[in-house]
Length: 106
Image 1 (cartoon, rainbow, N blue to C red):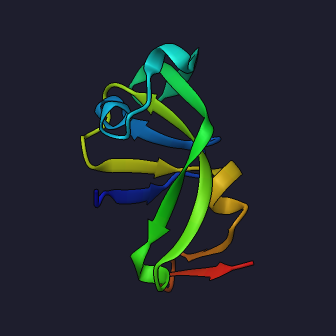
Image 2 (image 1 turned 180 degrees about the vertical axis):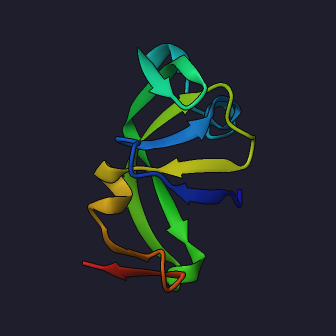
């Protein structure tokens, strides 16, 4: 199911909308439930240690494994890509003045 990923340097792991867990067949009762801080305040997250695979079409279909957390409040097609999965796989370059953004796999 196609989704849009937002690179989030403040996120530890990938964070998916709660509704996606059901679509992936993940039983929330088998997830660890923890509190997390978001831009909207404190929320519950359900952490699936079994992980998920994320395909990145813009990188030639490259796939990465990620620990997945699920939380209510995210738009249904948005994934936040965090440090432990995305940033450990890619070098992320941002140049605000030049309005440049670049990703390079390690």
